[in-house]
Amino acid sequence: MKKLTAILCVVCIIAFVALFAANAYVKATDCNNDYCFGQQFAEYNDLKTADECVFANRPNFETDISPEFMSGCTSSFN
Image (tube, rainbow, N blue to C red; front, side, top):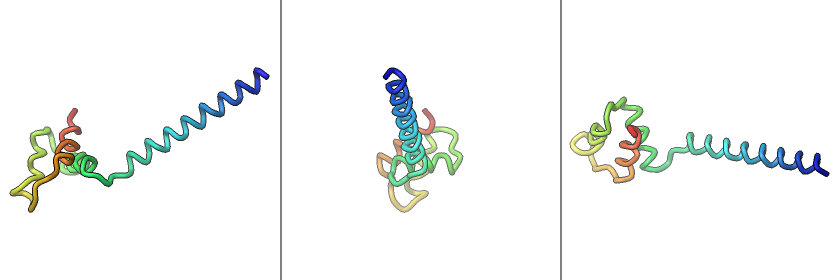
């Protein structure tokens, strides 16, 4: 009985770790919101400081960015 309980615990732990890893992978590869786009903007444009995130606004682009985009951009430097 103790062996069966131990095996079930191990299986549950492995399943939990697999689900956690799959969820982390999806979060890392699924960018479909302004926060994530802001992080990508900082990375792709090789920004050096959070102050450079303002370059995503006018006059460099046609429209102003959302607060979520700015938050994502500046979070890249924390």
